[in-house]
Length: 73
Image (tube, rainbow, N blue to C red):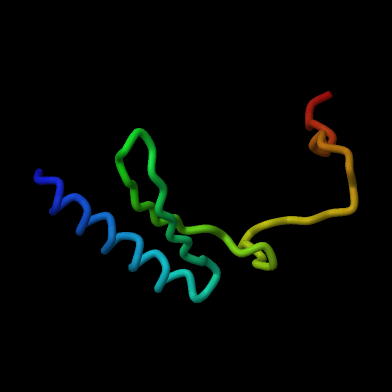
């Protein structure tokens, strides 16, 4: 696979993820130079005020699961 094709595939994937997230993800683009080489970087980040589907927030700080009685004891 060529470098250009792999970059295009990564860009398409990130665009699709951004579109499917319904505004929950943001894009960050950065440029930096190291050792005389310049790098471009794009990241998808989850916004701080976003609630995740299935995420459970409980005031109970006990991390151990509750156990019901076992039949046959």
